[in-house]
Length: 167
Ligand SMILES: CC(C)(COP(=O)(O)OP(=O)(O)OC[C@H]1O[C@@H](n2cnc3c(N)ncnc32)[C@H](O)[C@@H]1OP(=O)(O)O)[C@@H](O)C(=O)NCCC(=O)NCCS
Image (cartoon, rainbow, N blue to C red):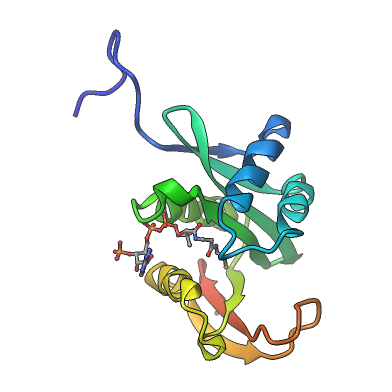
């Protein structure tokens, strides 16, 4: 397929490291997903993104964000991942996550954790989120309720994926 020829607009999504100026658009993406994130999250995402984060761009516009925290020498957590509400379900999340996991594996990480809202909550919007993690190789290993730091009534599903062999 041709892309990037003279006069052509490059619509191919791409993933790059989060840059200082990406904070406001990342926060706007989070604010545009009110069924998924409470009002305090945009500021947390902007703060957490400073240490390790990536953005997915589509037609040069930031369309998604993933924020990672190192948990130990061999483990990391995807703290936040979100795709612009109007662009969900097109493979962007899978592309962004795949890039992040490849980078983490190259950096020597073996296990990656993700915490999300458990099935037992009965909250429909997160059905797609759990399907996303499972489709991308994450395994549900535990449910913790209440999880310290989470508001009561939000059972946490703990997912992990092995991205390198550990034994
Ligand atoms: C979760 C999220 C990052 C996934 O990104 P995405 O670009 O929408 O997802 P993809 O298009 O890559 O979909 C990958 C898989 O996820 C699942 N999935 C995605 N959208 C779905 C939906 N509406 N219903 C059911 N499954 C869905 C499917 O298994 C899909 O694989 P398939 O296309 O082969 O069926 C994105 O939808 C999002 O921002 N959601 C709201 C915020 C959120 O839940 N963040 C994570 C908090 S833990």
